[in-house]
Image (spheres, rainbow, N blue to C red):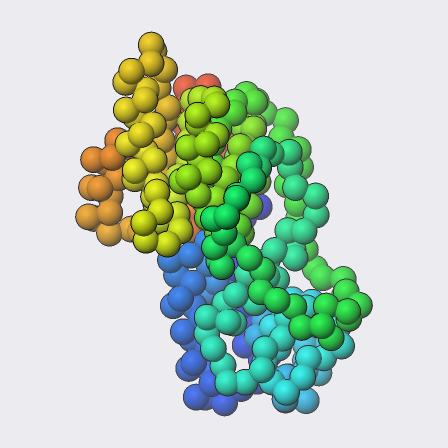
Length: 300
């Protein structure tokens, strides 16, 4: 399995727009830099994963249609072309454009999910975990067949050997990426979207491994660092029971890494994840993990 099969980095080409609006659209990529998935500028529409197109430009709309990319495009302008999956009115709001791109990724991943255990999220729901409302006209439009990346086959290697792990991530789309990645590496994933929900799960059972984001909701919520500390403290009082904790976060500063270390995490990974680094980390922290793909670096 190659890194490209599980990438959470996508390229986005821009069709049409004035120089001023293109500059505004550049903010989309800066906003995406610390998120998962992340988006980078694409040079050519034909080979980019997604597009942003000027809905008021006949030439831009025609180019999208010629390339049969209606379903992969965020249109911005007066109205949405029939068959499009994402549309926004002017003026350009980079945060809203980013949200629409994430919706397109969710649509691309809309085939049945691998088995998982999803605890009810209760009253703690975050706006980031909710898809943006779809315009009625767009939602009712016929879906256009989109070119999809090849889907990875069911793994033939033992991977995590069916080991059950806990995944705590408040972004629905980031959680889905990591869940799929772990599933295809042989793990059974129990997932939740908040520190509070994680504690509810942990009150009923234990896990050998946990993958935690640090920021888990609004200020005052239980974050990944606090959750890590509780896992480590609990393990210290249980006979021979130790939970390996891997932080997976967009916080990549030196201070953030020190805080993770002080909380007791066994590994610290930053978004967007790189497959070779992820595999190397699993080899380092999970003695049951077996990797039969290309050799991964010996350290992270």
